Image 1 (tube, rainbow, N blue to C red):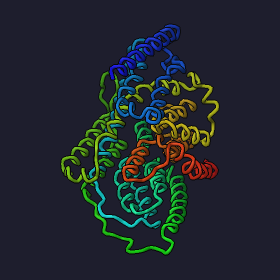
Image 2: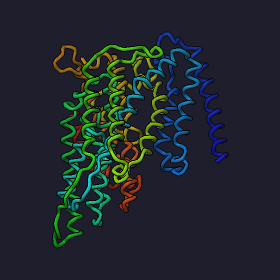
Image 3: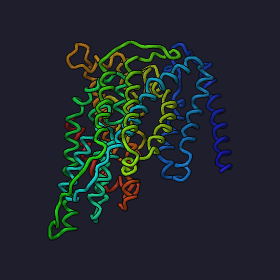
Image 4: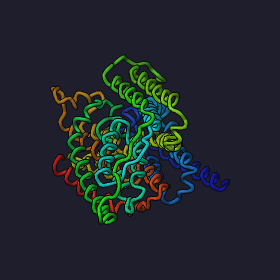
Length: 485
């Protein structure tokens, strides 16, 4: 253990010295007054790439080390960027760091924590017999639920009832894989509550119900096809297992415990909507303008989570196998992600003046944004991927975040159909293609782990891709491209 810490310290010290030297030299030769985005070089994004690769490869290559030290790895990459950045750019760097944590990270984590906490207090008791029709219905319910309680919350509520219903089935790995497709990813596409990327969009002035109207056709088309494929596949397996037909009753009484938590979920929705439609001014926090309605929104969301903890029994949460580990992991990893994403966002916002100008030239059409955002979301986390391409679209069109609501208002003379098309593609790509691998979205690995604990022989990382996501999802996404983009 001591050797691990010494190696980490040595790596941190070396990386810091190299990165600081490079940034200091570059900053001394550049004109900071033209804006950090126009000054920062591409290699300033290396810590961001490093943390995302660590998240992607750590659990696969060094799982024991990763599960014990992922927080230290996140802090390592954050420090490697933050200290040289502060020393080179000082006050301007401090402003950018405070801004991304006060405006993006803290509200992001508060919402995830509240949805995770409240959904963890809803337990579905009883069972259903896992016939193809029943399984399809349960996946449909989970898909609908995901946009309102989040993909993580919906996965927590639905995965165990699905596994209990199919505990006597011989073939059930496909059920968990399609559950990941639909409940843990595609179902979260309709509101900012559904998937973290969309909430980040909401924090950056995308109207709450814009995504519902914009992505509803894409989501319905994708979900219907994937559900249909599941029904056919599950029916084939079921007939092999029951060649003489079904035996016994299909239905057993179901019971939902902790239903009062739906009131707290409604409270969260109300708080988010309030912050989107009520403008109450702002107050400064270390030079960062924090909007009053957003502060009240976050306070209200925290209150909803605390009320859920207060009025939901520990016995019920234990029965639901509730634990804090998943949200703690997300909080630690995203603390590093949001620090290291600062240069990527600043460079992209600089548009043609930034170091990524050649990349902006290559990504021109909505279809390009759909596959570029989706491809990266498959192997990196879809929240920072969305934010990266969101800022790329703004930079490409010379827009600011303040212009986003008017640009997306179809009835306004200032509407910008090109930006709206880009954002549809980015939103759909980031949410849908998070299902392509186990590491595309946080709930994916959680569902895999719970299924394996229940005795399901889940496919390996590449087995999941080769047997399920590539043959099922990629053709569907090609159709989505041809029809919508």
